[in-house]
Image 1 (tube, rainbow, N blue to C red):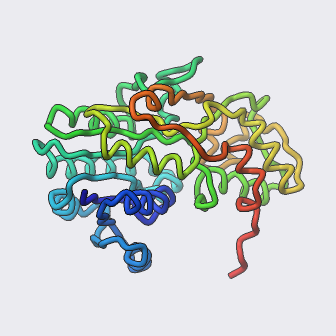
Image 2: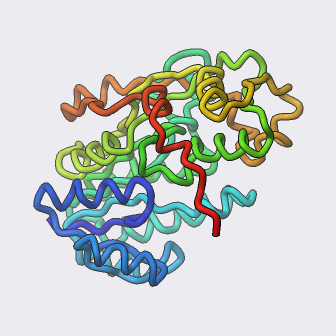
Image 3: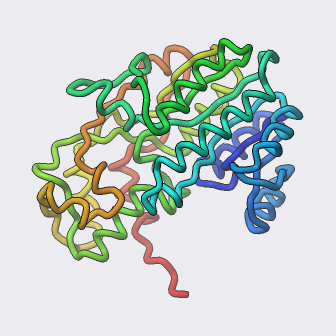
Length: 305
């Protein structure tokens, strides 16, 4: 299968590319920079130059493919406070991809997050059947599910907030570690009993491939290994590895302490992947979050420039 992948040079993309190539698929990767293009070419990937705002280019690449996996998101905009703008660009890109695939029965696998279930499944473990009605990025997820009615074998992979591995250099865990280094404490909010699900990068990549190959149209899938790790436990491991105390941060101070993560660190988001495992025969096989944090790769100091 010829597969067009956006976000091919990113965190999950760096694991997905060898997963796809190893299964015999041909991969075309979206690259917005010379650096990304060179990295993709070196990995054996055909390069399509462009970005999420190049809607005509996205349609062209999708039309030439047998399937599409959409990983890209404007994370820089999210970090700087324009989450709504990033979500709007995501929805426009997805509609462009769908325009090219409509009526073909080809697969379109998109990306969402389990944190979007914090309200839809408040007070209990979220499942693949839970869905919110509307909101930034929620609208993208719901649009992809609706694409099934346009003759597209569409599915959404919901990633947990912590997709972890030695390939994770800019995600929430490296960010929490950097904050703890900078502040001299590893923080959690309140008693830190709120839970975050987690999944290993390699397990997530495998799930994307299975979704591409066989997920039924209109499927919501969860790339979750750990259903819910108490945030305080995450903070305590980070603190111990850095040699700094783990401390409670008052909720009123979370924004100042955690920056753009301030609104997320107290969310309780236990999430199951049981239905995903039953549907596709997928099973998490790699280390869980706490075991991964006990390895050294997250705690090697960045090289001085």
